[in-house]
Every structure is written in C-alpha cells, then in structure tokens.
Length: 183
Image 1 (cartoon, rainbow, N blue to C red):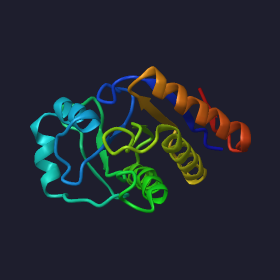
Image 2: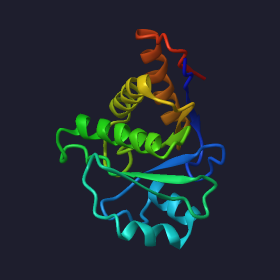
Image 3: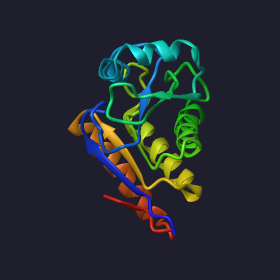
Image 4: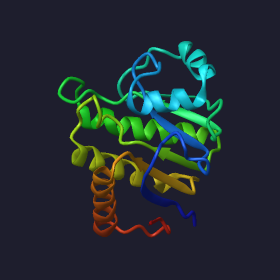
C-alpha cells in the first residue's frame, strides 16, 4: 500500500529543499517572468533559462522537465497553464498540467513534488475553481503513483485557505482506501 501525503502550505516555491521537484507555472517560452517563473529562474540561475531554450515553446497543458541548477531540488517541471477565458477547454488544460507533471515525476523516479497554484496569477484562472481542478486531478492521479508526497505551495494565506478547503472537501467526499492522507 502506497501512502501519499498531500499537503497545502504557505510559502516560497523556490525554497522547498525537502522536495525532489518543484513545478514552474511557466510561460510558453519557458523564460523568466513574474511570479513563480521569476522566483524559480532567480533561484536556479542562468543555467535554467539556457536549458529551457531548447524545450520551448510549449502549449497550454503541456509539461517539460529540466535540471534544478542552484535550486535545492533535483528537477524543475515546467507547465504552461491556460489563460482563463482564452485557452479552452480551460479545465481540461489545467488538469493536463497537473497530470503531465506527475507523469514526468514518475518517469524520473521522483518521490515528492511541490506545485504552485497554476494559472491563478496573471493568467486569471479563478482561485477556487483552479483549486478544485488541481486537487481532484492530483488525487485521481495518485491512485497509480509511487509518489510519497505532493505539496501545494501557496503564495498567500488567502490562497492557502482556498486550497486547504478544496483538499479537505475532496478527501471528505471521496476517502481513499490506499492510505493517502492530507496534513
């Protein structure tokens, strides 16, 4: 029986030293930007942008994986979330980000992944809807996973509350028999 701990914390996605991989809410060109992409590129140093050049561009819902360079992780998984109201079907594309990121983590034999709230910043995805999609997708994907921990790292206390409520509601509505837990 595999036990996967799913947790929500407030913090800095670029400072998750106990996680094998962190997920970048990337832009299509995989270059430094604002928000999560800016924080991760600043922490990783110029090697990350150089490696990303060969992988870009990516499409909404797609994910690619790179080294982490000066970040305290083994890998960075880059996902391009949908721009809300423009990239459709937005719910499917957002779910694809999480599914593809988890698949890459499995392929690389990683055991822990930290996600930001993909698409909820400048891409305009409503936070509560994004939280429901993220939590439901991750919990479903963990049924066949060897991951031991998934963390949602939220920038603000308000974002943390929304994601924690979505996680609690999902676990209450459909408890899992395989030992998955939240904290």
